[in-house]
Length: 228
Ligand code: SF4
Image (cartoon, rainbow, N blue to C red; front, side, top):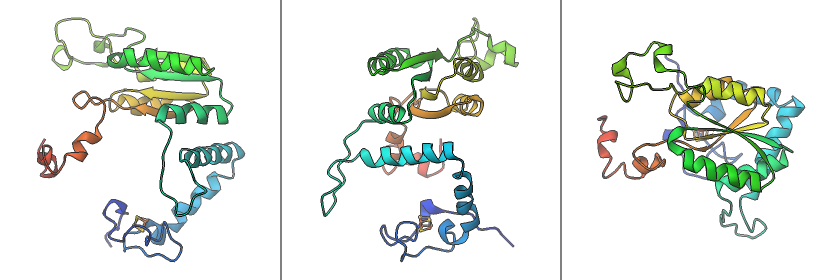
């Protein structure tokens, strides 16, 4: 029998009538709320760990506090906190003092400003650039034509090294700033502390990858048609 995987992205049920948002609601045949109860309930088992529970509670409290005038009815969403403020407040909530900042060389100016802001807000910041270690790309078996600039020394992005440095410094939360696709994955896999993403890299769209999605019906329609 063919397995039906969840397809929430294609949910046909209108907002507010969805079973995941409304106990009286409904869901389609691929609905994980209706058909993946065992899996979703497993999260409650994980959350029995007091440390994880505390983290989850604080994340949700922070989420709510990103909106103003929550006492008003009807409630109209009024978000008031930029993501960096959210990170600062969440870190304070958790009692974190030492933050890791793993950033890409291409965003070193932004990293400096970000680190300064975090320090001004009372944190100790361990910032590590992607090419820390200065290890040549040849070390991971790359050939000259697999480098950006073929005929000169090029340090590899070293997200595992960034994670190791943050681990050694015992950072309590790691903030990712502009790491490449895949390099970010390696960092998150090898960092001991929880990670959050401040910004992702998009070399073409000013680090705003959703610009492509917002323009998917117009200038970037080729992607919706399966073209690169
Ligand atoms: S959980 Fe179910 S109801 Fe909610 S978005 Fe997914 S498919 Fe739709």
